[in-house]
Structures are given as structure tokens and as C-alpha cells.
Image 1: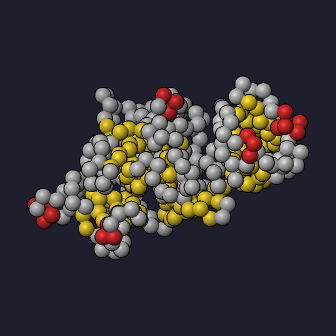
Image 2: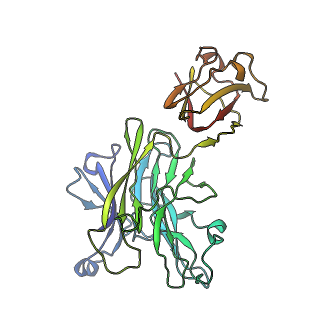
Image 3: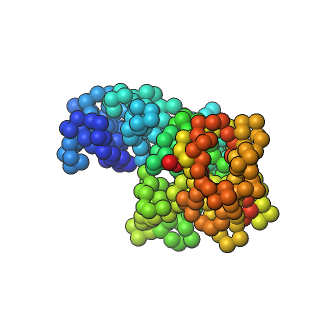
Length: 359
């Protein structure tokens, strides 16, 4: 087996409490009996004793099984969700890979893989050294790395592995990790700068050639821990030194996948119209020593509310995932609950990662 994903399914009958997706390599005897190599689903009562799910496998449906495919149950969608790799061969070019998604109501019958994330025009037009461009695309994506953001409804991230190979012989053949986000699991956004979310390590280190993120960050206090595998060689290198590989941990502040950054000269932005339930506004912010932040609450037309103007907001400073905003010492917003409003954030030397209304 290869590229296995295991998860606990508390909705399922006791005999199927644990579920697994994996690339299963069928033996010659199994092939003779009609069982093929490919992406298989398995179920288990305890995580130790496994049997094949009894329908529709190996699961092709447009996906490629030779990578780390990820699956789980999602309460928001009311479905099983699977992230897979899609392979295709555009006319006149070598094979390319992208991330796809599949859905199932019963873990046995799945929709055909739908492409959700691929190299686009920005990737294809990225600068490369003169005289080295081959007939391959400059980048495509191997493992999809799709997962739910812990504790946040209808929020998803991809940590896809970007495989760079713009030379004729498919070098440099290096892989790092991008970030894409989604609210519906189908339409995905990534920053146009295309900077890696997780970068390669220093030359000669066990994470200097390729890195692959594991799914499902682990909440630890005010942090999310993301474990990832690293290899200190390029993808096409045949000689494999087991000492040049390892498992690594990246630490991220809660809800810290993306943020708004105001520089030393300051900046501001205003949200679209929102409504909320709750009585206090909390922000996740990093202002270091010289940073500050203020919030003004406006009506749907953009007019400041008399009791929550910018000049009445107490200046927020510091670095916290749970900073409570106050206006003249009061944090109570219960009278504004369920009204259409806008929030205007004004800040300097500040990173704002998230805001939420709480009771």
C-alpha cells in the first residue's frame, strides 16, 4: 500500500468506525481473481483489522492513485470528501498533474473527480533562466493536501505540492508547498505572488529537495502544528540516501493561514456588509512593538455609528489571537446583533489574521 489516509468516522456503524483510502498494489494472484491495483477504500472496527469496502473499487473515476489521496467526512456538506490527483496530457506537451475533488454519500459510490486547482497563466508565464525552457509546463501539482480548517465552519485549505521542472530534462525537479483557500470546497483562491507556504530547507538538509504536507493540522494551545515529510534530493535523482529524509513540524498561529498586513506607514480596509450574533468583537493580531489597530463600526451605507466611531475606539496593541476590541472601555455590542454593518480597520505596523464576534 502507499499514500494511505486513515480517519475515524463516528457516524458509521461500529464495524466501520475507521475508514482508509490507499493505493493498493494487488498481487498477481489477486489480479487473477479480479482485484486490481489502484485507489481502494477500506473499513475497520478498531484501526487494526481492515477489509475492502464492498463496492466500486479500485476507485478510478478520473483520479490518479499514485499520490497521497485524502478523504474525510464533512458535517457542513453532509458528505464524504476526497482530494485526489488528476493526470492529463495536453496536446503537444508532457503529462501534467492537478488537484481534484470527489464526493460520496456512503464512502462507496463516488462522483467523478473534478479539477479544482492547477497551474494557471501566472505559473506558466513565470520567469525561467534563459535558454532552459523545455516542452514541459514550468510547474504542476502532485499531492493535493486538502483539509478542513480546524474549528471553522465552511473553511478549507489546500497545501498542494508544487513540482518545478522547466528544463528539457525536467529539472530542477524540486517540490515545495503552496496554499489555497476555499469556502465551498470547489472554488479556490491563492495569492498572485505564488510564494511558498512552506519552503525548502538549506542546501544539504533532509528537507532541501522536496517537502510534502500531511493533512489535518493539530490544534495545540494558540497554535496549529503541521507535520510534513522532507527529502534532501530532487525528484528525479535515482540514488536515495535514507539519512537525507525526515519528518518536520511547522508551527502556525491559530487562524494564521492568511492575513492583512499594514506597513510602517499605516493602512486600512473596510469589510463588506456583515451581520453577527454575539456581544463582543475579538481579533487575531500581531502588532509587535510599534503596531496599533482601531476599529470603526459603520452602517450598511458606510456611515459611522455614533457610539462606535474610530475616535472612540481604544487603541489596540500587542500580539494576541484573542484581543477584545473596546470603545471607551466598553466591549458590549449586543445592541448591534443581527444588524447589517461594516467594520473599518485602521492600523499601522500590524498583521491582522482574523476577527470574530463571540458571546
